[in-house]
Image 1 (cartoon, rainbow, N blue to C red):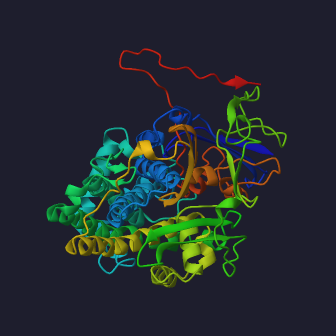
Image 2: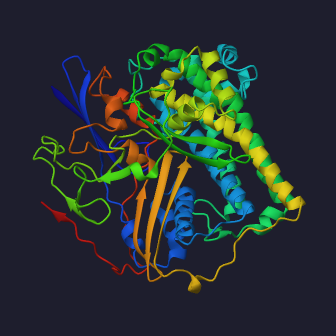
Image 3: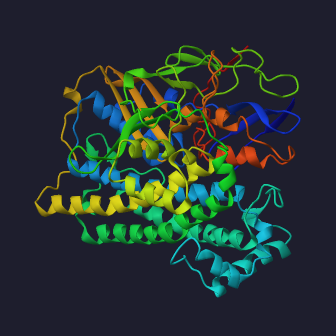
Length: 556
């Protein structure tokens, strides 16, 4: 048995390490995935005013800022039983939906597409044949002229002449597991470059109601402060114009590219490459009309799409048997254990600790969460907002529902989700305009903080781009006594618990074949399909470099 180590895994948020054990044929027999840096935001939140929770929790991540901001504020509102106005909920949803679109597009093109696209192969593409090829996946391909493809080729050639590939450097180019033709590679690379401009535009949509992005500042306990933007027709039009442009890119580039990649990797999809344990979790959310939601809540076990359990938050637990903590999962001390002498993780025993990521479980089982879980749960529960989008994609690609539970399938689910979110946004804005038309302009519920309960507990469960996010707060004497976060990547990147059961990352890696262990492209492809977002370590200094606080990590 041979061990292959990738550390750090690039093109993600944060620091992740993977160690896989492969047999003589290069097939992965066991996997250990480790979050490598400590996040101390929960510690920093202790003793703070609960109304400041969002501003601090939003700093957990530089990508998911809106999600953590809203999660923290929502759990404080839950603690004080504050019901925010409908308009505030809509404005928060509009910010969240724009973030979904941005996050999904950026993930595929800039963090994941190069696991499928061979940049050097594209240099051999014929622009005329490229234009013809694009029509196989879309009736109206995005920027599909010979001239455009010639310009993209010229850019790539300039990178090569300069002795480097710029944003495309350090890839496993020429790897045997790249399946796309030169023309197919050029199509996706063209959209990669277009997506760089796309992400700056869609960020403006978040900022229209958020004040800025990242780290928006308009969400407050009790509602939102962006009332002037909500009431300004020009601001609403600016938002809608950006979303309209985004929809065009999604329909003419993003979805067709997923159909292209699906056609090239059909054999791997049908073989179940990258399939995890089949346990899926969605908490649902985003009100549409009455009781209808954009996403349904539910739990799927072992790919049983016929029997969906309703989500029950009392079944959520979090363990730390193999994470670098001592005590229990909520009241614990960091407790780092050294690596083995050769630098590998300590994983020999079922109580060895090997990750900063804790081990959340639902009814004692590890779960996969994210776009795939949302699509599967909502489709299985016959959500009419989603079902037609899924059916159309499956029909055009000749896939079955189970095929989405694969490495490529996760990307398909993400693209499908992006498409129907765009449809939902336009209807959501219409609801907001309708409210304003009938003189409902409330965006904040008035409350007197000093009259609220001094001791309270709250929680919030949200669906965010990468999956289920939950925040928990315990307030004592009007100060945060304890704050806890279970992020989507915590669910997916969970280490094995004392029972040795693998989480989604590790299970998805077992069984894949690595063609060249010196270039483990297949491992990266599987892990990137989850869109990992490892929470970052936090260091605190003032502007003069003065030490403000020191945290001690015990080692064994």
